[in-house]
Image (cartoon, rainbow, N blue to C red; front, side, top):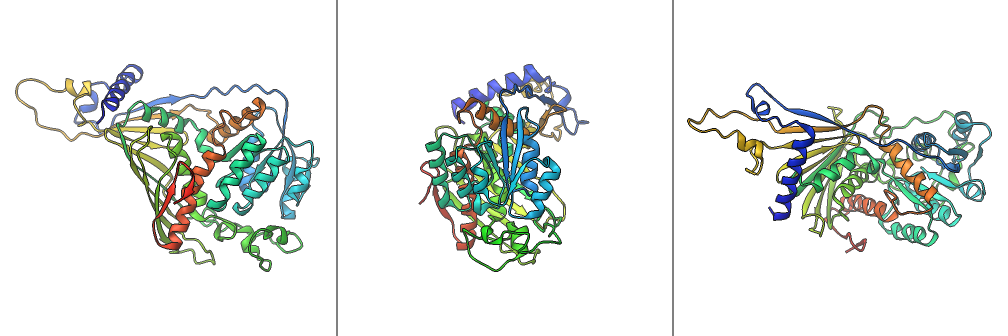
Length: 453
């Protein structure tokens, strides 16, 4: 271990001793103890001063878009004024949800022409993210775009260019980036809490039909209620297919599969915590194991990634997995493993695990060394400290929206949590997973210059 890492670790231990009282020397080594778990609250200053109202419009009023908008409306000074969707039923529902006075349309360009809209939330299928984002910024609108930022790796540079050219605030919707959990993990890693990072892993486990994209199909779904021509306007022209419209994540023309929908969250969190620019080698495999419902993407996917050494982190490896046939109904997590410990990270908590048999720099372990006859050795658990958000915490999605609207009020992308560059660096390795799986080979990526090698 480097001198810098040793120094950071000592500093971390000293801070932990002073602030938590969690490491009481005799107790956690007692044979009767199975675990020592100290809960430390994470806090967020929730005060938010509303200046002028920010008028928002929703483009894509499905479940994700509706959730994003409802979160946005919790932020003081945010007002809903318009909605766009290609399905008539969603526009009718929008008026019921958010007021009969809101403007509704099936044409996003008609919406962008309105002068009473300051910002748009884009929650369309992935294949429209790039074009609508660029058109919105060119129309003078700030943009909150759901992840992944783009549908293919080749689309990213144009969005970055549009953000730079227009100066409009642009936020990608991997909401965990702004969460207390990610912020605490970043702080702990920098303080040397787990030593030097060498490995990270993450997974998503799902089983129920709705979670694996077997979304309900409205009874009135037809060419009369859906603007199908607009939907396929930038991709392969096909006859109307209600499954391809309402269960779009299952099809490559519109969605980005497990990697684009779910891996991108894990990449976003990992890159925020580590300040990484991304991997330089990507390999993915998987297949369709259970959900034989006409989908084109796998329901089981694995990914392996090499992260090169940089000025801010050592070289490390990442493994990701996603299972839509998970009989255990497991949850989602991101784990970071270092030379001296590990962290399990969620959006509202971090559990730090330390090995009791780590090096002698730990003063509490040194105190356990007595003189005279050596007692019989004990089985020791890892020392675990859980940092948990305070009760009433509104969560990462709310924090992400606050970050977005704060930047709008300040009139600057400076301080935005997930701008176009960050969003592209998270999306690219996820999208390259799909390419690797299809091509059955590892792929090279230049994370600094953001291009395929």
